[in-house]
Amino acid sequence: MEKYLTRKLKLVVNRDKSRICSTNGVEFLSYQFHGYGGQIRVSPTSIKEFKQRARELLNRNHGKSTSQRLKELKEYLRGWIGYFALEQRKSEFDTLDKWLRRRLRACIWKQWRLPRTRVQKLKQLGVRPAEAYSHGNSRKGPWRMSKSLAISMAMPIEWLNDLGFFSLSKRWSELAPLRRIA
Image: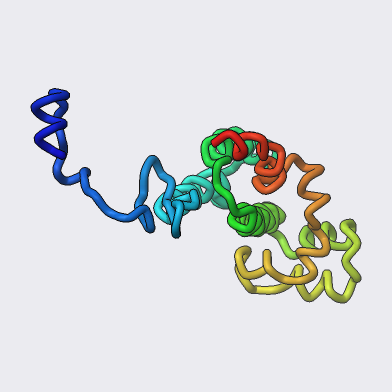
């Protein structure tokens, strides 16, 4: 095959990148092919790079407003999901959405800073006073607190969507016609 490509077609073949193998587990253009027939999935390295970039955009130590963070995140997510819309499993994007929401809750929790502010905001968002005091005065970090039940109840998915959170799984469903022609 290499002789045909180099002599007849006069193409340069990179031996490190070229191989003949089954499609199972092969990565190509940030996708990975699985099983018989090569089901298209997002490669694990792409997911890792996605999470790294999302961490940069939702960094808790930057002095940005929540709306500015969400605007920058939305721009990145729209491009990323547009490229990876051929992924055939919605569950992958549901998992990433959960992770992004938790990350956003941690950012908001860190912005509230003082215990009295946290208690006040939790009460405003409908958390019972006893839970608001215990959570607001907690010494646990933002990442740990973002998974607590009271924080999840105070900042539900609808509330985050009203702030401007961009859902990957919702956009994946909207881009379903692309998968039919691929």
